[in-house]
Length: 103
Image (tube, rainbow, N blue to C red; front, side, top):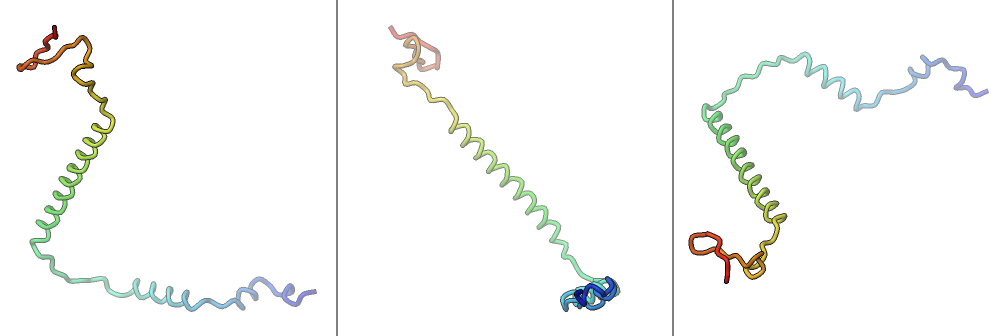
């Protein structure tokens, strides 16, 4: 019979050692819980304007790139126009944009 089999579960747990990292984490958690949380700071009034400016720049920049992406997709999937001689019926536009039949 193995000598470790006769030990109870409580005795085996007592023999296990905690790692030093666990001790540090527990200590840090206790300090964070029990120290006062008051922090006195000053926020410059210009910070709000800076945040608005950043938000608007991100919005308009995103719109610009979305438009460029849509233009790219439009040109990528656009059907090619036939040349003027290949148009059906030999129709060409005149100087006013009206269709005029060749003939």
